[in-house]
Image (cartoon, rainbow, N blue to C red; front, side, top):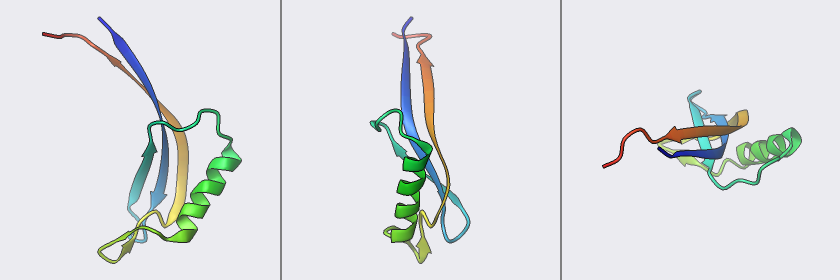
Length: 77
């Protein structure tokens, strides 16, 4: 059977309600540095562009990571 591997850049933020939210980029550039990610995340948080029902989303940066998943096909009709 086939297997497929995907890499996604996931940026995790806390909202003003302290809930953790994930911003995912399936076609992100690979090899971004920690400094580049931190700068981008802090810019997103500082701008305060996203809100819902009185809650500021992506209010503070938590973490950024490349997440790699492998899907292995086991059965197909």
